[in-house]
Image 1 (cartoon, rainbow, N blue to C red):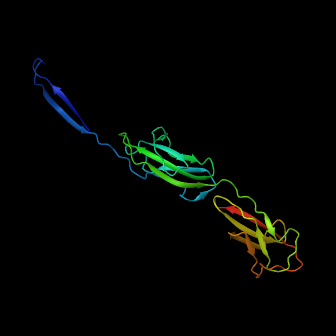
Image 2: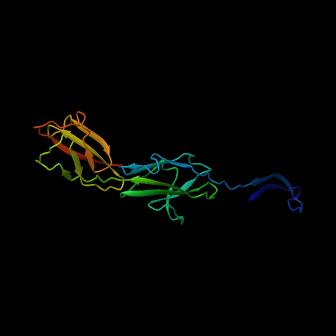
Image 3: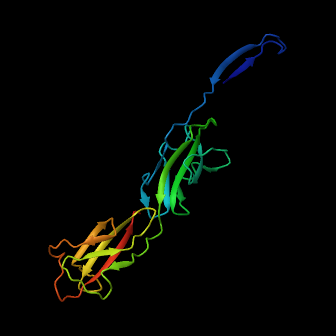
Length: 219
């Protein structure tokens, strides 16, 4: 659109029917379309995190191009804006959203420019949050206070389920506090492990050993 600004100058008695126009100014008002992909997050997509706060930054800065955002934070991959959502503007340099529960979360935003022109709605995510520690593994074999007849015995335990995945660490030692374990096998994905038969993964006869499993989730 446009608007016309002018000033009329009258001569004579001031009742002339043909005023002289001066200082004519024509100003065009052009809609400003906000840029796309203007928001970034301090966390990666599709990566598990154990802390619930995700921080978002307006990389374009607030001004004529982006006056404000309407935004939503939920666990759906797509979103339809109603303009009744929360508003993010220059009063908040960075926006922090907290995941209220374990799972997948998405950030949706709709930018508006200073000419009240909407941009393209954007969906960011999924952002994965798992703040629940995995359960302790139940040890199966060898039995507690049991005896083994081979130096390359097998260890087994019950599987643990966790939404971000589970890795196991098998530790074997002479002492219950596992200060410097003889065997420290990390990153196991299955619920069993057999000693290799090469020191230190080789049991010595008439010796008492202690073993445990440490569970670690993907967050």
